[in-house]
Image (cartoon, rainbow, N blue to C red; front, side):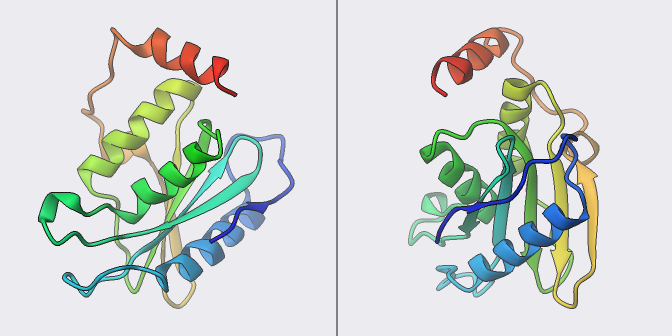
Length: 159
């Protein structure tokens, strides 16, 4: 998988062109899923503040807790490249498949870093897609009051 750069727009919210690029990246990532147990391949892609797109896919674990969701894999791919300001996450599947609660909580951590909402694009085969915010999908999530300042400072220092 590789990183794609797209021109950064003035808005934090992704525009139609950025969404189409995310969907394409997530669709391609889906092809690399390691879904030997679940037989359910999912692709994901994240868009960062700098206009970079990072892909991820689900990986089944032999032991259940060893697996990783596509959304978390894509976010981790961005972090490996020192990109912690996540603008959007796209999930691609045959039908509308929304992020699980664990992934939504993981995204909430990155919202605390940026201080902005992460847009979630849920796309399915055939080209249909919908957008939601992580707050819409997980309104009662945990937000750390103790570590919020530390998260922001750490992200700023390590850019």
